[in-house]
Amino acid sequence: INMEEIHYELGTKGAVMTRTPISETIYSYALQLRQELIEKISDYDDVIAELYLNDADIIKSDLESALQRIVKSSKALVTYAGSAYKNVGVQPVCDAITTFLPNPLEHNVNLKPLDINKELCALAFKIAHHPTKGVLTYGRRYSGRIKEGDNVFNKRRKCTEKVSRVSNVYADEFKQVKEV
Image (cartoon, rainbow, N blue to C red; front, top):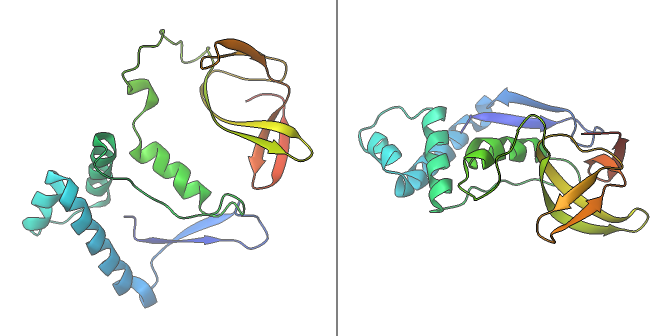
């Protein structure tokens, strides 16, 4: 979509990433793959199909909008490759989540009104057992603050649970923080 290369600096566990324009050596191959992507998208999206059939220039924003519509309609999935263990490819996946997935605030779910600047709204998406740290809950915070010692309401279990520690996780490194 962006016609760029992503390089990860060795020894930084994926934390240092640079984006550069596609090099001349692989430009024609990347252009061919982009054309195949456009053809596939046009199978699912009428706007891109019309642009493609009329030989119009299809720019990045056209493709992003089309992929948003495709994902929202559940016609197809957008996939990315990477390694969370080595923290390689994680940033593009996070960028894709914010670009292609629907905004959770626009989702039509029967929830109580949320003061986005004050109240905690988070999603626990993974529970794992660590050999030395015990049970870990991986989550995504959408609004509000969460800190050590807080009590949070678990909507699924319909009970309150205490937060013992808050950490930022990078591959297999845990950096403890006071609050997020």
